[in-house]
Length: 83
Image (cartoon, rainbow, N blue to C red; front, side, top):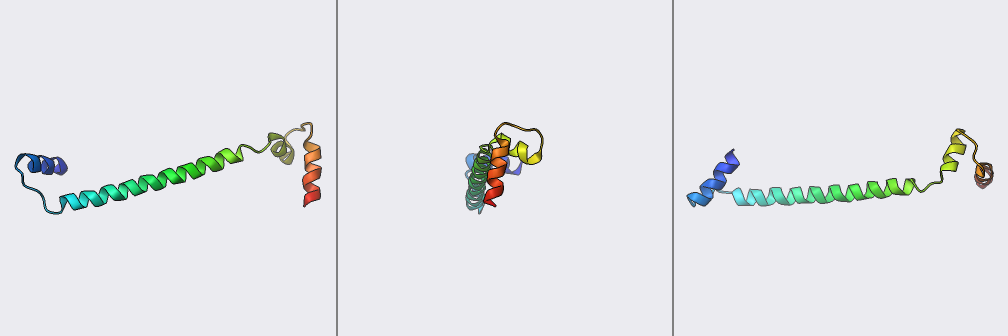
């Protein structure tokens, strides 16, 4: 409510509150930087999630032993020989 009072007072009476505009500029800049960093973090997480979905499903199932899928044995042998 105090914010609305200061805005109305500045427009109707023409008197400005000392330090109000500099405080608002600082708050808006910091808020904008926070939103930008949150957007960058969200984009990074989305790309990481999207990249993790590109892994073939049969590899995960064969490693967990859930079910046998055609071709999973070949991949398991190939990865065991690479290690």
